[in-house]
Amino acid sequence: MPDIIIGLIGSLRTESLNRTLMHACARMLDARFKLEVEGIEGIPLYDGDVEAASGVPPRAQLLKDRIASAAALLIASPEYNNSIPGALKNALDWLTRPPADIPRVFAGRIVGVIGASPGRFGTLSAQQAWSPVLRTLGTLPYFGDKLMISSAHTVFAADGSFSDAGTRDRVQHYLDGFASFVAQHRAPVKA
Image (cartoon, rainbow, N blue to C red; front, top):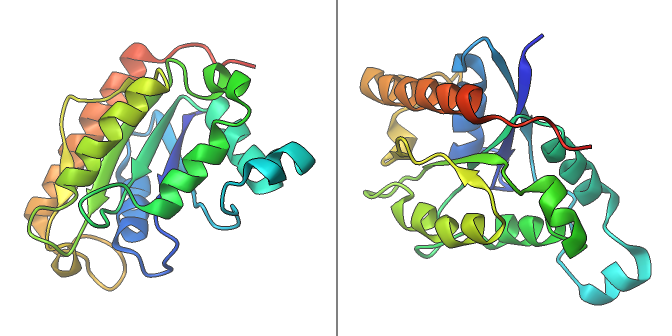
């Protein structure tokens, strides 16, 4: 049975380029792993008063538990205003509540960050902005390669596959490296 990698889509938009990218990755990942795609829909804005009164919202708790039981996390992050998108950062803020859960969910967790954008520089600034966040959480980031797809609105076919062979090859190269990194560094799942 293949090990699970959670593929977290960092956009709420149904037709998001990053949603399309993540689903394409799910079809291309090494057979040793299964990429299970998750979204951030249904996670409310973080509010400490809500947390104090009701705890972590059920959708965020489910996502935390899924990540904690997975071999790795792959994030498809859009870039908004040269940084991390607010909705995705908000979801991550809920995933770190309460702080005592951070080690169970994130410490030593292998994480890759990819992204697609219609802009010229892909998601370069967003990926750079993720580095201090992932370091703070104690994750094990995959830095063996970068995957930032620029002009992404031109590289996908109507069925979500890649119409551009060069982009498809770059995605496959990234996924092969990420899968090898996960196979080499994965730790036992924390209960």
